Image (cartoon, rainbow, N blue to C red; front, side):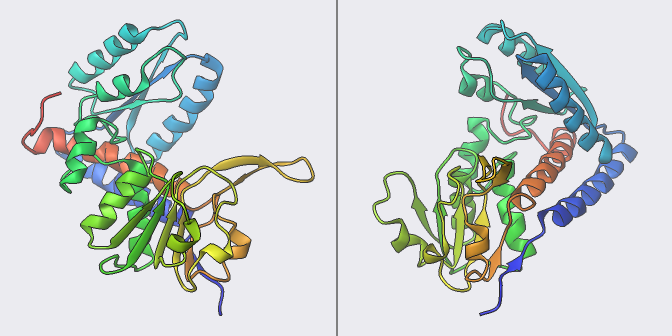
Length: 295
């Protein structure tokens, strides 16, 4: 059997960014400016490094980026006040709440307070709920990235057996819903699944989003299956070097799968590009489409 087709997430991500930049220019010609505001709470040094990375990516596609750094001593009320300020500012078209938040702050409550139309990460429960009806205002970026990769690979999920390992709120569950909407037969695996092999070996499409390095080996994979690895794990190898790996044993599985994504360089770069695309889409929806929900 020939080796799997490897999906280059970096190349796909660059293409999405180019398309996003063009869409942003079209909005600018109509007088619509895209502005992404990020909130970070805690370590200012780490925040500065992360902010520079976010700002550089936004500049690549013409998005105005602003960072709001709050001290680690903040409580729920202070973070909520900042989110309220950004929700009410018409110049702000997208909001990102960088995680983790300091201990003691109710992270889900803060995410839920973001205006659904400015929620470029798709974490507000209104958006998650609307995804159930295949009609979200904004959707989780990682799940959108997985669907974009399937499209890039030329895979139509309709009628296929799809197994999603991991049922987290921003990856596994939204991915499962997207696949159901595209008429795949979806199996959802999680920590209580009794026989993982039984489910993964039957999958035409296998998506793994657990955060456990090396969880999936060649024995788990149906020959010719599409394998998308969402996991990002930092490990120390036998020589003491730190490296980033996925949930799938890439070198073992690539000779069994028909299509596979690497880690790094697979889902990650596409997710970053999708976030930027969502920021532009959020600005368009706020100015062009009728509002369906209140903030």
